[in-house]
Image (tube, rainbow, N blue to C red):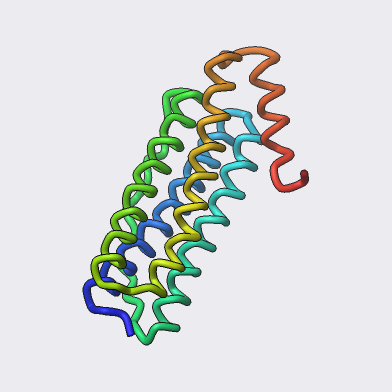
Length: 164
């Protein structure tokens, strides 16, 4: 059985994951409006992953006898300064999610909730991957610049995500 404190914190994380989904969908829309279909494709796959993360926690709360309570999802930004700024925002967002996951893990440790610790370990590992992926794309953008052939090549590379 989940404690009320941990149940509340997990419900808040479900909201963050759905917000993440909404944010990535907004980033996809921005990318499409700037003729970057590969960027949009990458963001749409990321959006789907975030829904999966929310549902993983949703299922876990129910399996532990808790109750999911969904809150309002904040409206994400719609405009970004540039492709580089877009991926800087992605990296910053993922770092924020990592910090929240780490706080959840600390709560589970404090409460000696071993099952939650095991479940959250998956998210900790996932966040390492999320940050590494965003960071690699951001560094490529910084090296390549935002105009010309390099940006087009990166856009095409991002379009292949999920096909490799």
